[in-house]
Image 1 (cartoon, helix red, strand yellow):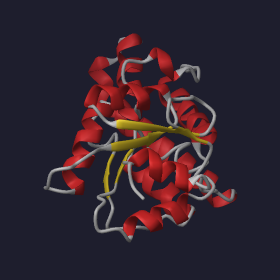
Image 2 (spheres, rainbow, N blue to C red):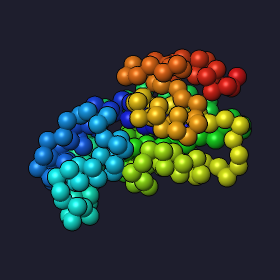
Image 3 (cartoon, rainbow, N blue to C red):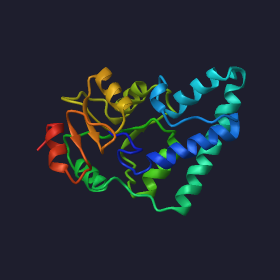
Length: 209
């Protein structure tokens, strides 16, 4: 199972900026990039907490609709003007996993589904057979992961591994009993890869040959 921003796609920084700008446009407040202060580090979770903090619960539905629309528009505009890149080796690594008969794959992202698909398509990760769950399904990352797992397969698993790049990914994996592999340099878990050019190490961490 894979997170998307910063894990499969080089999108963490601009995605954060687009989200901050959308909140500023609609709610009129500036939100710092320290997502670690929020209980649920997902688009829906962060926005819900912001709405509570400013006392606008009665306008929650309108704010959600407007922020999401602004955010989707900003991400779409960014992608139209910039070349987006996958994390090095990600496309090849996923292709190798897809070919295996003993592996089920899923995407579980804290972003909303619309922007997640835009970013995956933009970097050439167009794998319609892979299950996905997102902040469009739930505000909690652990619940998003549960939904992704359910959509990936109805069978049982010998092991479950999550690739992520944030401390919230690590905590959610621990809560659900997932084997965790960190990607990039933002955090350093016991099992860590710089990118997917270290595919042999990644396969070893998963427990595959």
